[in-house]
Length: 418
Image (cartoon, rainbow, N blue to C red; front, top):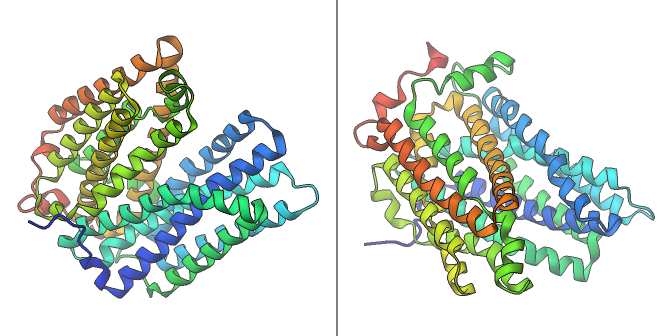
């Protein structure tokens, strides 16, 4: 039984370009995180100022995601990706010029970071919407796994590459290298060929955005993917507590802290590389529920305590479970969301993911403030499991969904053509 990641989607030249361009763009985004944080700290010496980067990014990231999805559905998606790439390139060039200036300005860093967050809220849902155009339905799980491979490779290698750049060429030189990566991604995505709007697609308007939300009405399977993922992020995402846990359990070891942050990405990467089995699973909703339960169990185990190797193992298992959830959620979206709505529903999904991460960190930090880090992590893991069970009972169609027999009934007619 083959378990290695299925490379079949890469045989298609257009998908290969999409995957390569997205991989380069993902790596560039990870460089941004480190380079911008370092520059802000160098300019201010304040961890609060570094934390304010997230605040600057939050509003454009969430708000633009809803508008960006409508843009993706209303215009040629290749052009949308190219325009977003050009906008990102302008921001990176601005960061580089500012870094090389005699007196770099803090406000420039915040403005560019916020703009890039907004652009990502257009480009990422658009890339999600393009994949089902290029890949047949039976290859969607493999494509989702391949996209997770590139994402997690960037997650793991990006900070290390940024560190080498900071050491060798400094912040300004790091932004120049990032600009080269953005240019390479842009050149690759520009060769995708035309990806015009679907027949009957809505134009860009407030009504089109509202229609995207209305699309979920009655589509319990698609809605279930959003709700169960938000549940996992809200209760089972304790990354804000990693510094405190490293200090309390592992004597403040910087190595331990780095391992805690890296472990979920490593687990997800291993899951991506061994995802060949996913094409043989057809109960996609049930698979997502089970993956979220495994995530909750792993987070609970991590919270209980133990040596560093066990903590890292639990977090790696959680990352593997998240990868499984991502693969089957993307497979459901590709099967049950009409092409004319994929951009808008992708925007909602992106806002759901990023909003869930933020809410999860707030929840974990708040509970830890009034109890303890251990109680916060363990209670969050248990709540994640309970939440998954409650949603499974409340959404039986989601759990019963079988892609072999239920797809047409769940998909329904395209509202854009009615």
